[in-house]
Image (cartoon, rainbow, N blue to C red):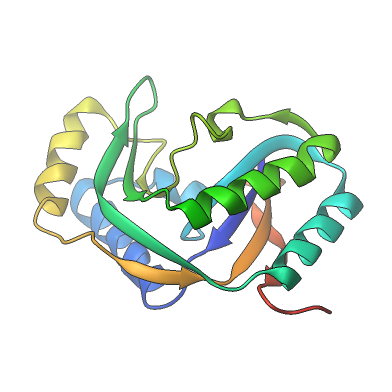
Length: 180
């Protein structure tokens, strides 16, 4: 799946990478390395018309100012393939930006991931996925339950993530406020 994401700023990018390293070294979880860029996602789709997407994201980023983001604690998406994450609080500013992205990209995307629709969207920063098992969840929670996850930072970018390789890649990145 391809996605519109925002990459985390330093030092929060490093904090997430350190958590990934800790869970790999102490619990044996490596699945998060499938998408090795600390981020949160706005939308996912099987395919986008790329020229249109580039124009939309460039325009939106050029007109945008950095957005304050707050996190609060850990969460878990349950099911066959559990995902452990840091919860991103849905602020009104974040919701407006999310709605603008969906309005702008609906005509140029195919097979959208419906979990990113407004009603279901739970913005989050993934900490463990792909190889999370019921047996390992307890170990992970024991390690992470003592860490404070009430973070505040600003995001200043949109990035286009494409899953055309084992770890995917960032194909385009647009900084807020740049009208190039």
